[in-house]
Image (cartoon, rainbow, N blue to C red):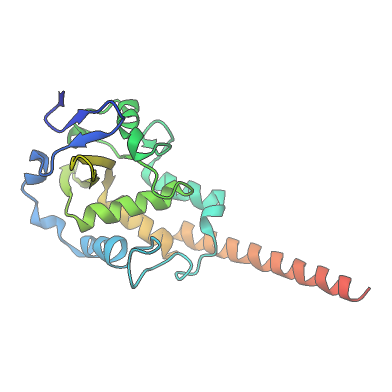
Length: 226
């Protein structure tokens, strides 16, 4: 059964779509392709921070962070940039086989018409939804499955990540996202601790790690001196 000419439902929970849907044929505003666009391609695609994707990755550890996703402050700062609220504009507790369920939960139909930021993604490795999100962004960029729309003077990017089922050769959706161009840049500034909030958090976490290490060393010395 067709759904807005973009996708159709499947009893197994897959969301089936077209290989070359009409929304991908939208004319692209060349003004989008500026320095910020180059930063987005460079960070999320060429030097993707996702494990095992790029031969020259910008991992968060290589950028000076140590297990940043363990920090509730880091996760909150990441979410706040996009205004993410779980089960309101941010859905991630689903496998690709359950993506139709996730999409129905969002109550969106024609995702290219949604005029706000959101992310509906399937699990990639299942233990870090925010890194899964970055993985889906990377795939969408790599496969050219994204378009720009200018809304209220700001560019929004609509991403879709898909894969082909081996048995049926059908194209199934694993992620759909709408993110402001400025959000993608702000995330890069967070990862590279270039914004004021990111720099403060980075220093706070470094101090916390240093204090933890010093405490551990002092405890070790006490044990050895007994």
